[in-house]
Length: 260
Image (cartoon, rainbow, N blue to C red):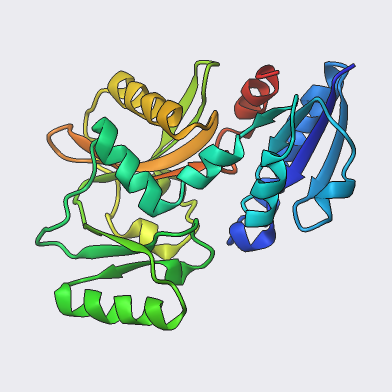
């Protein structure tokens, strides 16, 4: 019998999504138990050193101490690996995307700018802000620095359809959705691109691109955002470890459970 430990993400990393993030973990746990696994669920805010021993760990954790602890474990299958989770910090991610040729938004444009904290994933709406011009951008940078955030990335706003995608590496699972179609938004800025026009694009090429990115980052359970332009070209504006999969939870849970 395989022993599986599931680590719940600290609430600070689940803005407006605490219940959704827990729901995907519980859905995976249910499927693993049905496969005969012994499953334990703990929060990363609890002392992990006293967590039940396991053959497999599924983790949504992002706290530095969580990642450090996971790196000390030997002979355990870990999804997602702590090194891959660290690579999802936007500064590291942007450098990696540039190195492997992932389509990215330009640095300059005429439709405003996005400023995003670069050290960690977003913890509040103030960690990802829109600035209509350069002057406003400098003001937003100053606000971040006053909050103690010295690492950030800047990109030009890209006009087009916002597409949210979800995937589980090595299983064939890949789905994408338009947030304006179902009205599910984590923050109001996701509606800035307006109603989706459903511009035609190659789903196969997008899947191939983000799977290549997931491989380079080093994570198997991933999600992100892309902007599809009117001409069918697209760029990746966000990529992160283990989203809530709230639009496709049951299918995603099946795929994640199949990883073992």
